[in-house]
Length: 327
Image 1 (tube, rainbow, N blue to C red):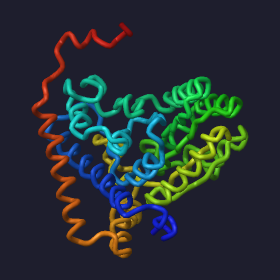
Image 2 (image 1 turned 30 degrees about the vertical axis):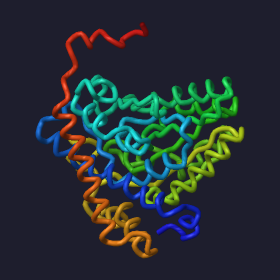
Image 3 (image 1 turned 90 degrees about the vertical axis):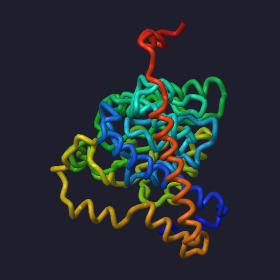
Image 4 (image 1 turned 180 degrees about the vertical axis):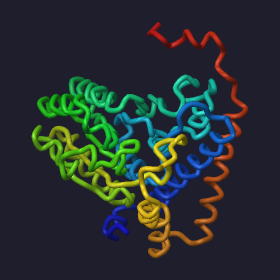
């Protein structure tokens, strides 16, 4: 587990809340899978199970004014940022009360008041948008950093290099956070990326990078906080690569024929929730009774989110023509 020195800088309430957030994402995703199987959720559903330490660690290090721009495995970021679970679930259900009023679904979660700017389905298509937000922040003097979450599959897209080059030239406040879960859909990283270390990919553009253990929430938080400080102080963009693993398939439609059960089992032994919960217990920060209470609280929250989604109205037909263009 993470060095005790990392935990000593944080108070108990925050340390326990990091666990609560990871548990919330895990239970939310498990319930979303159940609702998908029951036919309540349509389209694609990409679960974040196994990667919770990345979203929770990174988002907890951000400031309230910072932007989040993410790929389409986006539920974890929205929940970590504080989006109401009921509204997130309602969006998955396609209901009018959803974050995107039922029009975006799983892959297009937006919560602008909380700085959540998507949720994008086109691989790497969101990277220049994050750079654009960073440019606006710099020109307006707003002290906002755009944190762009992208998967390992996005780094081979040309637009990633174009956007990174522009960000480096203009020293824009953007953090490229690469979530390396080992596979771009069903293709292993080593079969798609000719380099050795992804975090070094920005060297040719003078963008420093660092690799972090994406299964350890405190290490992710520490690395993100350091990178954000460097970016915010005018040092230009940075790259963070978190090594992690999704415990489920690429989507609910994925039969997972491209990776072995042994590989998955090895990663599951490092479950970020299990190891962090054990760590808090060993440090006498969380008793079994407190853990059980936390589990019940999270379970009730997710159950309420499902109830809210089920009872919410469908969008009215005229909603098809609303918010297409700026009025």
